[in-house]
Image (spheres, one colour):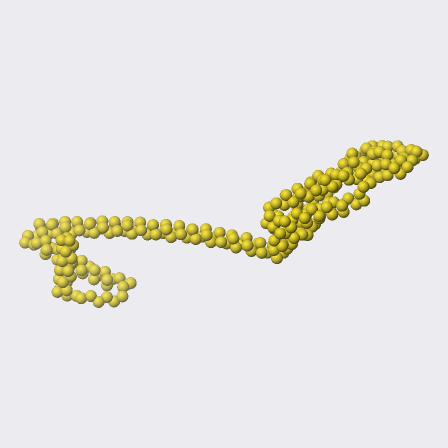
Length: 286
């Protein structure tokens, strides 16, 4: 509901304050409600001011210490002090322009002493400095500064692009470090697994050879006891010849092997047996 008045009376709304004059001179402030005036005595309602909080957005372009042009968007929230409404009514013709001028002056004096990174980190300090300066100045005119918000800091487009590229490069560098660490751990684990596999494989081969040796020994002893007149050497030669022919059979049945040339004949078989026997004897003597 708006304020209504005529020459003899006026109704002042809530969150408003009226300015009453007598013969063109300030007389008093009119609180919300119905008021009567005596025009024959020179009383009149000069104007009505709102005591609600108002908001003013100010966009400032300035330069930082590292020569980067930025735009700052400030939101100033202010209101008229009821007790000093007459000062607000008579002293300032355009309060918004006055507030904007002081914001420009303070920001352009403070921001050039900061780098762009410091400005992003300390934008609250900039807002606090502007608030303190405006409170001192505008308080004398009947205005109270409630809050100042540094809504946004907008660098030049080329600067934003460069900052994004720097951030991307840093993240890629960090990702490559993590990737290298992961590959290092993978290689270490792979090497440990291969070493463990070779160890277990060696243990398996040793056990296999031990079992073969024990089996051959048992066969030789059984054959020697059951067939009279045979020595352990003859039984060993017979077993080696059998193993030799089994090996040749396996080579022939395997489709993955290429042509293999090996010496064959009774004399060569005896030579192979002698070589194996001599090798075992040399190993035993060593």
